[in-house]
Length: 145
Image (cartoon, rainbow, N blue to C red; front, side, top):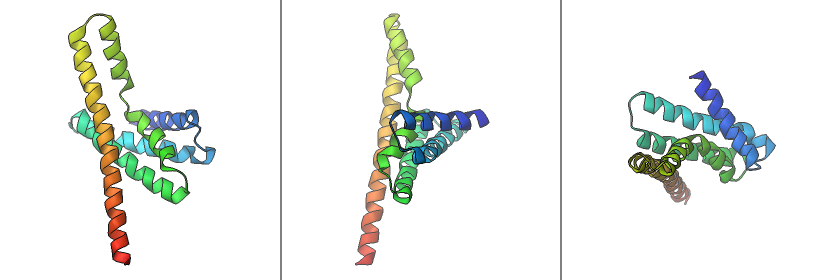
């Protein structure tokens, strides 16, 4: 588990460096990615399928990104992009392409389908978080008036 935590932090912070995130936001980028990966890993270890686990982890990443953006006065994209990186199914996509090249189409299609479902789960998780944030903003705005 410690290896999972450390590597997810390094991956998220490393992609923050690649995407030119501000230096003083790299720790937060790594923390957001690490917490998203911990949720994903914990849910999968408890027997949840990887697609809903990815969706919930993406929602957590988006919520934490909103909080970091508000607290540290930085654009939300800085935290979202680098935080979502540990959840991206790059290894599965690579294996799908490798099986296509090797003319193993049955395995390639199965892996490609899994990649599409995981990518959709990430998109849905980010979208649900944004919708939830907009609803909360409207509720707060209505209570102030």
